Image 1 (tube, rainbow, N blue to C red):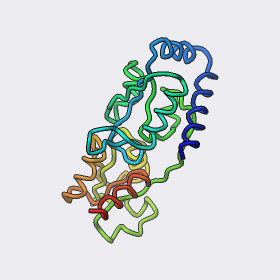
Image 2: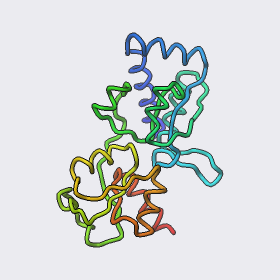
Image 3: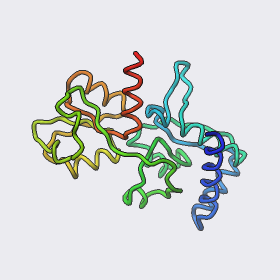
Image 4: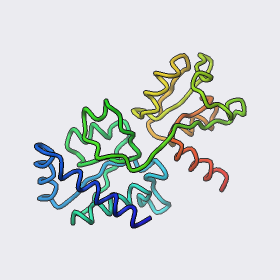
Length: 206
């Protein structure tokens, strides 16, 4: 795993150096500063999450550490709500963002994606057996259903396009989304498969 992460970090570095014009000038600023600022939510396991001691850990944290190490830079992780990640990048508050962000054409018009390092699918979390076998979005396209998604995520765009009849609620982070589900405020939550699996494993562990 460590070898894989290191190879991914090197690939990211090569991609960054190969981008002409503005990106090369921005990269020089980062190198001159001696610090790589990476925006993360710190609330998206297994990508990034805080442990009991308050330290941010996760797959993408290790990726960021190896990237900074290969560039011989100090790593600073900046906590940013998911919906504000690209905005913080545009405003120069961070140099790059992670947090399991899906590559889309719209996002690619605002920022340069260096390539995917993980393939993810959509999944749902629900307390109702009625939706446990759901695998087509059309089944959920019902005005009586309430679905919560992460604000600013690709899941938000997906439900608005594929499930327009359902009532859509937005959570600022996954903790808020899961909280709505646990309190019965929504019928289900739609998110990345990795997060749904992680949540189920955590719940079963309790």
